[in-house]
Length: 397
Image (cartoon, rainbow, N blue to C red; front, side, top):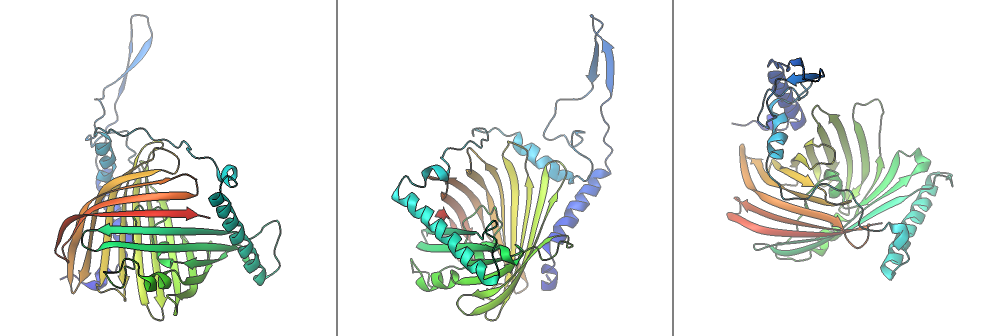
């Protein structure tokens, strides 16, 4: 029987223990460096002959791998993937669209986008003035995201959900405070989350547009205190606000990055929120990435969620994928998803399958389109693998 208390232990600690264990096992292996033999050719020129075989992605004694702080067998997974043939073009960061400064007067839509940006900045400066004397050399600024999510599958049909998220920096408060508003569930995701997800589905499955849910999800507003203490070994933000109309809440978010050997990096986030109505909410985000300059990278994103509002004790999601970039701000990834739950002392795999995703700016550098195509099953709903398509339109101001 699985103990719920043990399941609530930080997955970060478990992951680090696994990484340390594999690293210690691999460190105990003796790796013999090749010996260089110097010979003379017919012209009297010295040559070095190194007695090594051609590099192989399956060579577990390759001395080119950094043996200090390594990750054991995990080091060889990228080499195995790189050994497979590919039809995709090389990585590129070439810009295909002109900068916003050159397009903001070209059309009615461009002028509207410019006016919204100006309005948000004026609003930010007015709010900043409520907290003290403002500095004209350091004016308050604001950012705004407007998202239109479209979701379709053969079982639940079509659902449309507009979402908004904004942030107002308040420099009069020592640049540590900001005002955040809109759909707060977007902040529960990793910054580079690859999937179009929705923590709050429609109240009624037969509704294409759930107006009540849309209003509740986009009505959050909070004061955020960033970088609470520089003495902490991680970044910590604290929110105090109201969500879903009348749910007063407090929220903490801690995150940290580690640079590991052999082009690996590790990112961890821990979120805790308590609301008067929603009560306890905890989410752990973990990301292990292998990235080399100007090459596609490999990553694994894992999420573990506990919430008093959800039916299951715990839910988990995992995406292992490879990502390419063919031009500036483009993102193309494909991989395998697994997800499940822990409930009534039972740990279950509920869904798995392949996915592919494409994201890019289109027409203007402030307007993005993203398309996700999933082929997952759902064992709890007794559904075999089926196609699900999601499209997101996103405008930045």
